[in-house]
Image (cartoon, rainbow, N blue to C red; front, top):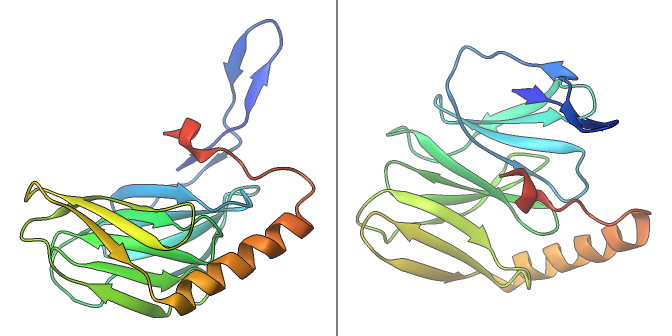
Length: 169
């Protein structure tokens, strides 16, 4: 992992601020809305949470309820309360971002899930797969309410707007 803020003086220049090396392959990453932490999906089926400001690993937890396949994708919800994962065993799981507790698991695709995205209204998780299907999963009302409460807290406490992570991809 390479954490590097852009430096601009007469042109665009990037300087590395942190360099993190792991013994496992890193497959995917997403930054939670406060821009303090990055969730990284790894070949060993773990989600590793890194502090962006210092590059240090804060915690890690299993990113799947099963022991088959590899963790392919990670996606945080708009509030940063949860992180969704997809694995090569065709399942999707949702975990509490801070504790690592699994709050939901979904099966239905017949091939690997190649992409996942929470909707901005916190009501759905959308998945796309090698089976040529797009699934729109309705989230439990408790999850939606929890995400919306967290979004409300973030809006009150953050002095700066949440980062636009779509430009990081």
